Image (cartoon, rainbow, N blue to C red; front, side, top):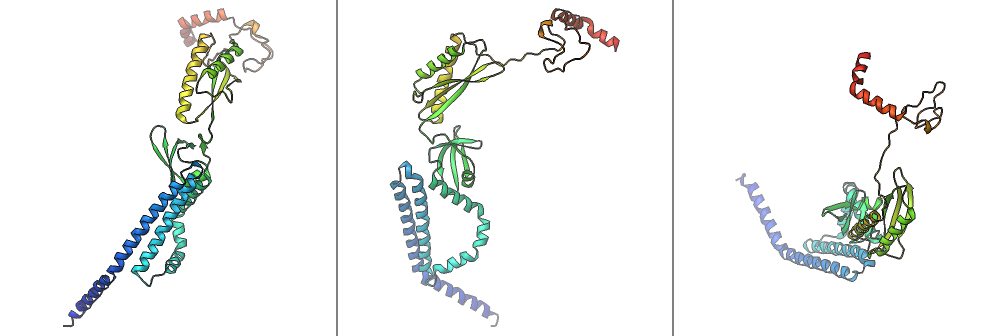
Length: 331
């Protein structure tokens, strides 16, 4: 009989648990109903705040308020539901428990909290907004969503990039669509023998005739570099709106028309060239051999006579025909 006492004790405890659960069942049902009601109220408040702040000037602030209000209402609903199920429960007990473990939670979720605070600051300060086109490090695309943890952008080739808000908030971000107008520019190289004024005239005519290039501010054509093979003229013009697709379409039309007009006018568009000078294959008229030339140090004393180009060609021909064997025999 003594062996039955533990079984009886366990059975009695199980019966008490079932009885207690049955007694709490109405409270549990009421708590679920109450929490569900708070959840729907939270969703409605978020949707209402977003609808009231649809304007671009307050859209990000509306996202912040909507998310904060939803979280706050759900938190209150959780407290109320717990108080219904456990009448002795007090919100202060939970706050005290969170205070005890707050340091450990802070270290464990430091990055999450940092991204959350950065997301709130981004939504409030609005360095960029939804549908803005931004450049962050090697990523470029359109902002699709600004969450409290990360910002999601869609690249121009159809990929999704998720960037933590802490990185966006502490690093430089280029916003291409921050203003209504955007200036485009492209350097065009013409030959040194071409007429610069004529090239500028053609460039400005093309920019003035392009329907997407704004006339206020007016287009410009400026000489910016005397390069090794070209004189570089920078064509600059403004577009509106400043989105990526508009910039690419306008640049395509402008550069195609510029190439056709400059070539038709006889203006050269040279490619880079290099000239190699051999030190001992120069003409007598090239200058004083005692002076530094082509990067070679100045010679003192006996200066060799400059080799004639004609003689050099003959020597090269002889070397190619049999000079190699001579060098072999001498060695």
